[in-house]
Length: 539
Length: 90
Image (cartoon, rainbow over the protein chains, first blue to last red):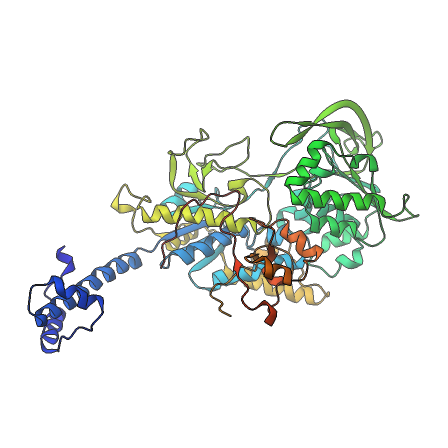
């Protein structure tokens, strides 16, 4: 209450003196004039009292503002893909005084926008422009080459920042768990995509595309379609994209002419989306094969299509493709086969080349309803073999846990409620890890597109804002405010001799990649080794 | 025409996302628009809160006949409950 009235300071005395000397006709119809009627003093005095009260109120607000300004909300986001950047954007918008740091284990930002989106999909990468504007705003830093767990621990980050948001996605794979899975020639689609997109951890994959004419891809989602398309597209078309040059060379020498996309269930359940399917079906001079018998639908299928526009349109595209085109490929023509109702039982080993895959032993499946319109695949006991020299598993990504982070191994996500990390998997929404949040695939599982993270970040940031406002962060002790933030982090990393790559370092990499690309009519020539990237970042 | 909000356009108008998804409030105006292309429909498939009168904002080109068109932005998504949360104005 006492703070409502300004203390008697020299400044205040001057104000009071000025107030006494000025006329005090408060304007009719204003709130100040309205207050008049509640004050018992002569109008002249009422005017002074009201103006001093307003002055006092402004002092209080200013003091609160400066309190915030001197202890800005310090946020660390781990992961610089779409989830990380959308989160940063929204936090900056909601908390004007905040300081946000985005860290990534790579020297390059943007996550899967750089290393996942296919080279022949450049428009999808336009979102990078929006993300770089977030950093260029000045209140957000990108700090690359910092690995959570080895460069800095989660516990340390939580001490350095008021808010830590984990948005590091899913860098591992679901496994089939079937015999022969570690034969040579079997790769996860994630690794293959990293390889052709020039991710430094995919540089040495060295897939053998020369000893076979057939590739089998297990899975029918968009990643599976990407892989199929990159294997089957004319390399002359790929040459003008930002595909990694080691991959382009390997594809130019590739003997692969037939690709099989194998799904456990039917065309109605295919996980891909229309744009990608339309694109692969429209590749010039490509023979498409879909068994008409596989297009038979069950009443449950019809229900699924009625309630889902996506599935209905996918089914229509596949039906049209099954009957369009010739029934046989012409000589030398590349082939894409959609195989439905088959699940892998085991991988077959080559007799000529011990340790190498020679095919997949597939079991025919049938669909079984499991309630709420969902159908699962169950084996029928009938088997057949599909020969191939390379097999790619595109059955889903999986997140990797870190020390000190609660993790649900079954679902492959961090247990959370609306982005607030829970202390364990019990599902008890009241045991929350203060100041720790998740966003993106680490929160929801590895599904959805870039735009899905917009809404995911909206929800997580809403939780952060609620917690900030309710004083839940660091509520226990006063000593939690302020936090060392960026300065503290950089000091620790310097002690540990970690070569932090700031955004300006990425800009140097970016400039050099574009320069190298212009020499070869490509938008960029990606640098694909850690050494090259770190060197270019510091030049 | 009064424009008071900026709609997200992650792909910058190249029909590679659905972040500019808008809902045309009046059927009268919806029918004045040209039918969406296959490419636009492919993106609408993925839009959150899709309705009978949904379109991608980047595909609606302003012209005199559309004067008075009212567009709504989908609130939240089917997956995420931001129930009742009202962000503090600042």
